[in-house]
Amino acid sequence: MVAIFERPYRPGDWVSIGADRGEVTAIGLRSVKIKTEDNSTVVVPHGKIWTHNVNNANDGERTLMCVASFYVGPNQDESPVQEMLYNVALTSAYLSYEHPVLVEVSSYDLGTHYTLRAFPFDMRDQFHFISDLTQRGKQGLQHLGITQVTR
Image 1 (cartoon, rainbow, N blue to C red):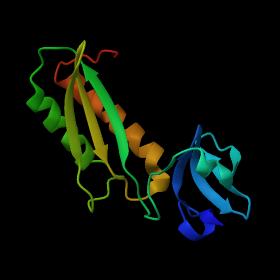
Image 2 (image 1 turned 60 degrees about the vertical axis):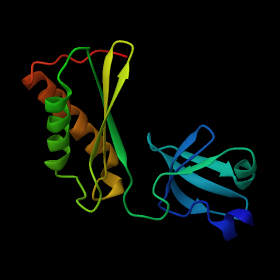
Image 3 (image 1 turned 90 degrees about the vertical axis):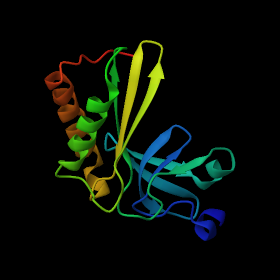
């Protein structure tokens, strides 16, 4: 009843409930059906919302934030990398211009972590969008003469 009245998820939402993540395809009286990234169907009992957090990535909207991460070594000039990644997002065919593009920069033990956050026009394109950002971001880093490192 709580899931029906509070609506923590609705069909079309991308949710994580415990270890299960995917698109809500149906809501029944006792459970919710989720289509996972690998196209499997998982049936999650509504009772899980009492013991697990529900992470709803789009909460009824038609788009959701996508993230691409890049790790580069230390002693790199951050401004050209940040600008290049920003331009990679702006020139993606999948980008929704209704939402901001963010390039976050943070340090970690072996260098710098760049997080590119942007929204695709349609959430069904999220995996193509992330692949596009990642592939073209890596090419941009190579063009700048910067090698990616593992974290």
